[in-house]
Image (cartoon, rainbow, N blue to C red):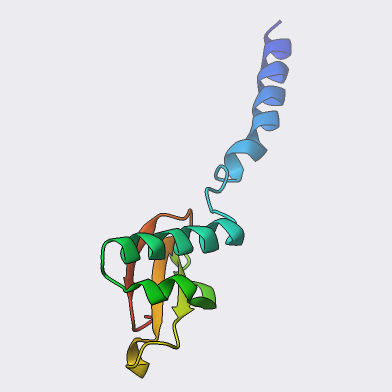
Length: 109
């Protein structure tokens, strides 16, 4: 009887091992979701008055995942050629890998 119980427990544990070994599932958002979230956040910044309405027509020019393996983030750049200051024609929106807004700047780093 003890052998049957041992075999049953070993079989059960071996069957569950791949689920635990993978470290769970990822919460990373798709590139489509990241781009849409970045556009949404840019729209919120426009409504708050941080950027003028001409930014509504800005085009995506950059979208990369960067950072250390344990601390990645998405950077999505939008360019607005109507802005006179060349250094402020591109704004970069920072998002977590699962799409939460982190911040924005003109530097891209």
